[in-house]
Image 1 (cartoon, rainbow, N blue to C red):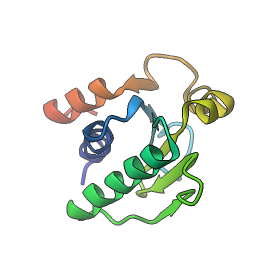
Image 2: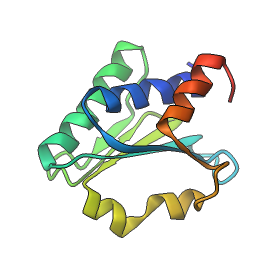
Image 3: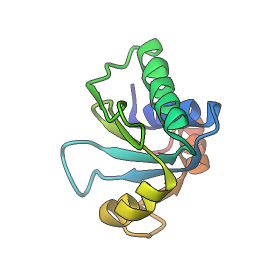
Image 4: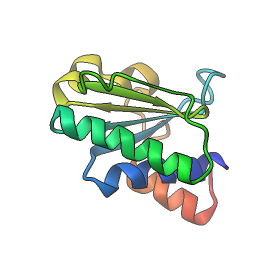
Length: 127
Protein backbone atom coordinates (compact mmCIF):
# COMPACT_ATOMS: atom_id res chain seq x y z
CA UNK A 1 0.00 0.00 0.00
CA UNK A 2 1.34 3.45 -0.91
CA UNK A 3 2.11 5.93 1.84
CA UNK A 4 -0.67 8.33 0.83
CA UNK A 5 -3.21 5.48 0.86
CA UNK A 6 -2.07 4.32 4.30
CA UNK A 7 -2.25 7.88 5.63
CA UNK A 8 -5.78 8.23 4.24
CA UNK A 9 -6.82 4.91 5.79
CA UNK A 10 -5.53 6.05 9.21
CA UNK A 11 -7.08 9.52 8.96
CA UNK A 12 -10.43 8.07 7.88
CA UNK A 13 -10.36 5.55 10.74
CA UNK A 14 -9.71 8.36 13.22
CA UNK A 15 -12.33 10.66 11.77
CA UNK A 16 -14.91 7.82 11.69
CA UNK A 17 -15.22 7.98 15.45
CA UNK A 18 -14.64 11.68 16.00
CA UNK A 19 -10.87 11.89 16.51
CA UNK A 20 -9.95 15.56 16.92
CA UNK A 21 -7.08 17.69 15.64
CA UNK A 22 -5.74 15.00 13.31
CA UNK A 23 -2.38 15.95 11.83
CA UNK A 24 -0.02 14.10 9.48
CA UNK A 25 3.72 14.74 9.80
CA UNK A 26 6.06 13.64 7.01
CA UNK A 27 9.26 12.25 8.55
CA UNK A 28 10.99 10.89 5.45
CA UNK A 29 13.79 13.49 5.66
CA UNK A 30 14.20 13.03 9.43
CA UNK A 31 14.41 9.27 9.93
CA UNK A 32 14.52 6.04 7.98
CA UNK A 33 12.47 4.20 10.62
CA UNK A 34 9.08 5.36 9.33
CA UNK A 35 7.71 7.76 6.72
CA UNK A 36 4.96 9.57 8.61
CA UNK A 37 3.44 10.19 12.00
CA UNK A 38 -0.26 10.76 12.51
CA UNK A 39 -1.27 12.53 15.72
CA UNK A 40 -4.85 12.78 16.97
CA UNK A 41 -6.77 13.57 20.15
CA UNK A 42 -9.52 11.76 21.99
CA UNK A 43 -11.45 13.31 24.86
CA UNK A 44 -11.33 10.38 27.28
CA UNK A 45 -9.42 7.17 28.00
CA UNK A 46 -12.23 5.21 26.40
CA UNK A 47 -12.26 7.30 23.24
CA UNK A 48 -8.45 7.18 22.90
CA UNK A 49 -8.56 3.39 23.15
CA UNK A 50 -11.47 3.22 20.68
CA UNK A 51 -9.67 5.43 18.17
CA UNK A 52 -6.54 3.28 18.34
CA UNK A 53 -8.58 0.08 18.06
CA UNK A 54 -10.44 1.43 15.01
CA UNK A 55 -7.12 2.26 13.31
CA UNK A 56 -5.91 -1.29 13.97
CA UNK A 57 -9.16 -2.85 12.73
CA UNK A 58 -9.25 -0.79 9.51
CA UNK A 59 -5.56 -1.50 8.86
CA UNK A 60 -6.03 -5.24 9.26
CA UNK A 61 -9.12 -5.17 7.00
CA UNK A 62 -6.95 -3.50 4.32
CA UNK A 63 -4.23 -6.13 4.72
CA UNK A 64 -1.81 -3.89 6.61
CA UNK A 65 0.22 -5.63 9.31
CA UNK A 66 -0.03 -3.95 12.73
CA UNK A 67 3.46 -4.26 14.18
CA UNK A 68 2.54 -3.24 17.72
CA UNK A 69 0.23 -1.22 19.91
CA UNK A 70 1.29 0.33 23.21
CA UNK A 71 -0.57 2.25 25.91
CA UNK A 72 -4.03 0.71 25.70
CA UNK A 73 -3.97 -0.09 29.42
CA UNK A 74 -4.22 3.56 30.49
CA UNK A 75 -5.72 5.12 27.38
CA UNK A 76 -3.93 8.43 27.87
CA UNK A 77 -1.54 7.91 24.93
CA UNK A 78 -1.85 4.94 22.58
CA UNK A 79 0.76 4.32 19.89
CA UNK A 80 -0.09 2.13 16.89
CA UNK A 81 2.88 1.07 14.76
CA UNK A 82 1.92 0.30 11.17
CA UNK A 83 5.49 0.23 9.89
CA UNK A 84 5.61 3.17 7.47
CA UNK A 85 3.14 5.15 9.59
CA UNK A 86 3.16 5.51 13.36
CA UNK A 87 -0.11 6.69 14.91
CA UNK A 88 -0.24 8.57 18.22
CA UNK A 89 -3.67 8.97 19.81
CA UNK A 90 -3.59 11.12 22.93
CA UNK A 91 -5.71 13.00 25.37
CA UNK A 92 -5.35 16.77 24.87
CA UNK A 93 -3.31 17.37 28.07
CA UNK A 94 -0.79 14.68 27.09
CA UNK A 95 -0.54 16.02 23.55
CA UNK A 96 0.09 19.59 24.68
CA UNK A 97 2.71 18.40 27.17
CA UNK A 98 4.76 16.31 24.72
CA UNK A 99 4.18 18.50 21.61
CA UNK A 100 5.13 15.84 19.06
CA UNK A 101 4.35 18.20 16.19
CA UNK A 102 7.14 20.51 17.31
CA UNK A 103 9.53 17.64 18.02
CA UNK A 104 9.10 15.94 14.64
CA UNK A 105 8.08 18.67 12.27
CA UNK A 106 8.16 22.12 13.73
CA UNK A 107 5.16 24.12 12.64
CA UNK A 108 6.23 24.48 9.02
CA UNK A 109 3.42 23.92 6.51
CA UNK A 110 5.46 21.50 4.38
CA UNK A 111 5.95 19.02 7.22
CA UNK A 112 2.70 19.21 9.17
CA UNK A 113 -0.53 18.76 7.24
CA UNK A 114 -4.04 18.74 8.51
CA UNK A 115 -5.85 15.51 7.88
CA UNK A 116 -7.85 17.02 5.01
CA UNK A 117 -4.60 17.56 3.06
CA UNK A 118 -3.62 13.90 3.48
CA UNK A 119 -7.05 12.84 2.24
CA UNK A 120 -6.77 15.14 -0.79
CA UNK A 121 -3.29 13.83 -1.66
CA UNK A 122 -4.48 10.22 -1.53
CA UNK A 123 -7.41 11.02 -3.77
CA UNK A 124 -5.23 12.76 -6.37
CA UNK A 125 -2.31 10.36 -6.10
CA UNK A 126 0.16 13.05 -4.98
CA UNK A 127 2.78 12.42 -2.29
